[in-house]
Image (tube, rainbow, N blue to C red; front, side, top):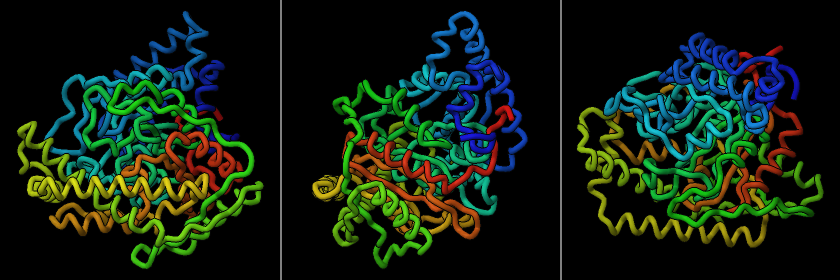
Length: 474
């Protein structure tokens, strides 16, 4: 990578460590960019004092303990946390809802501490749809998050604000969460890299806990595979959660069996240019000495349908329980959220249990596919990011809302429900200059294999970032 528009968080950290700019300089540049690009709607809350204090503390560390400072992967790099997920001090989360306000100190979490240990300095919260229930980030309370590549279209959801902020260069890396594609879909919309880690790899405590029955993962959206690999290594392990610590397997060497899935069935037909990008990625991996094996849609269709059902049922019961436990005023939430609450309250335990059993069978189906292949290359999005307003939440038809999301990203929730790792990255651009994303999925504990293959695909340089990172020296 060279030049400001191609830089990533690792390169920005290198400039800071070399003394080209200070942590405070980098933070002030990010704050200025945030203010200048307010119409993008990527950031919903800013706490300059918190960000500048963190940056100043690291500048002092660089003087007093230079070795400790140099050992931080992202020393002094500004970032934003998502307005949904593991909380960060000084950044009170509202989950995009009128139910809460950006007041108070903001809680801490294991995840936030690890971000700080990496040297990242959080100064704000990125925009999320209310409770993350959309693949667009357009909460009724605002702001409307737009795609920096084309402000008329969505940046995706639910980590749309994070992706927009990174793609626009406000920050070089941003915290994100993924319960049904919420890291990968925005990354795909904005030309970024997004990894949904193996279930149980990343800490979710102590307060965020098990809100979604284990289907949610947290990590980041980034501008490069190496940034994703670096933050993954810093964040993962010792999760102190409901799962045994996940031991990462070393990336495989030698000839791999690469599964190729381009067909998404008649119901979820994929646009030809996106299917062609998926095939091109698989063919490139084949050209590196790997074996290409075709995967049929009808062999995965039942698992995909089961995943979609389980996702809808889990989020419904989860939001109903949250509202009831906290005795919140349901009249304050969006119409769609109200409908999910009512759906969750009315759902018989046997229906939820049936969905959870379907999720187990979906995982088994994937394991059987991975008996034949080492990795699957597949679509991330069925179409280009749609216009702002394509996922309205002012109605109460939850089935329609879930169907709209499934039609846009039919393979998104499969990784969440099964627990398998999945990564997306751009592999070309369409006629409108928008990214052509691909997705790869691997067996549990094989996140490093995904990162290895993604790095090889990235090196083909079929996508270039449009905007420089704020403050990056030119």
